[in-house]
Length: 172
Image 1 (cartoon, rainbow, N blue to C red):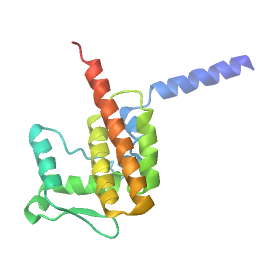
Image 2 (image 1 turned 120 degrees about the vertical axis):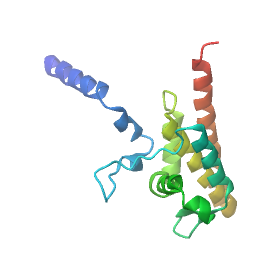
Image 3 (image 1 turned 90 degrees about the vertical axis):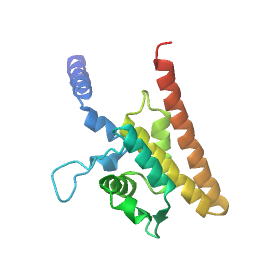
């Protein structure tokens, strides 16, 4: 019996150790691991690959965003919306980041116990989730407003903790 348990634990450890990074991302943003309907590729875009991309993301967020009744996010500025990165922005905002308060709380819980520095795509998606949460808090009233605001604060704390892990990891 002990031998079988030991073999099972060894197999589990081996399987756990060989999991690719692609699957570890699924823990925080499961929607990023779904297949696109039109191709066999994973739905896993990343906006920030260069400083210019960061500036463009900032422009997307400064340009007025439209969030319709179905919680679909789009960029109002037609010129910005026509860019290739805008299509990736729309995919991330509408297909990957969580929209319900339950999903956002689940993300906050996972982030609070995340043992290492976030990957850039997870950090980016968490920031966009925070932006969406701030919008929902501003649009809500009463108890719902408090719930959305609490979720915003929890995401903020998780991002701050991530930045502190990164800061503490760097040599002095």
